[in-house]
Image (cartoon, rainbow, N blue to C red; front, side, top):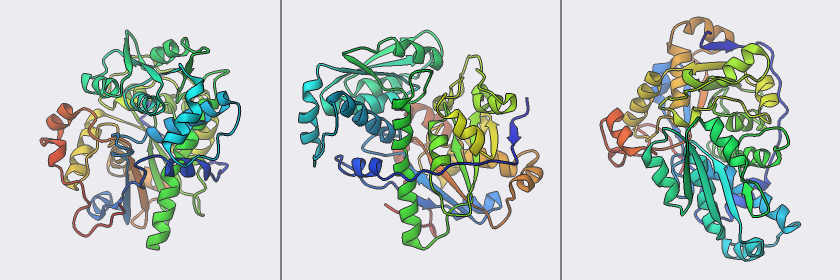
Length: 391
């Protein structure tokens, strides 16, 4: 199978959401994450502008996942409570309102970041957490989850098998908080997707503040598809941007599904260094959105991710393997084999304004040191000279 697929006719149904950001605003430690402008990288790609939304630090965690997990947990607990818990002004008030729901355990499957986010929110609310991870999950990510007070269970299988195992725990005293969906389980994954909308409303606000135009190309990492679906659903300014899905060659479930025109599973082992993309099946909830709304699907090698990590480090931005995948996808698209044809198909040229999302920082510090040649703390996490950033 080719590593690229273009569909000439796409459509999406934008949704404007404000409630998730209002919720996040009331959580301790909320602040918009930086939006960097990387002119040197843009020039190397032959485009006008590259915007980088840096989610490597969000609410004290090294990834964006807490946005979806916290909103989904809040809404699920609200449902168990029997209705709205408004008004509340701080976490302490909210914790008191949810206390009667205990004892309660939150559980999920993860390649690392989503599970840590669920465990973190469970701890904030005073609940327990059990997190299932697939075989081969690096110890640093397991330790990160355990640091939130969670019980971590390693499954002798793939991420998809860990999802199936976590689903078995659902019950009166256990709430499953998954970011992927299956028949009969869609409400919580929908809330996870909604939670990611905070990222894009922050981007809108910052671009308006700067008086800059919106991007016309957005490259987004694709695991099970929740983030990609959130990107497609956002009410971007007209004209609608082009959307590029970026997957690992070792688990390109969206690419395989769009070629087959139906959801198909990609068998394991899913062993890319881009651990957050090691997913063999598209979310049932995300599929109708991404299959209609994404313009192009591309699958990349681990070597491209390594290249992107090093480029970002030179620009002063720490990105883990999955976090760098958006840039890696752009490099493959714009500078890789067949790039002239792909540029023509997507109508990309020197006027293109692209956006990528650094979805995670150095969640495996030792691997980061080996790849980049520096400790994450030695990378100057600020935009390079001449660039623009929003704190």
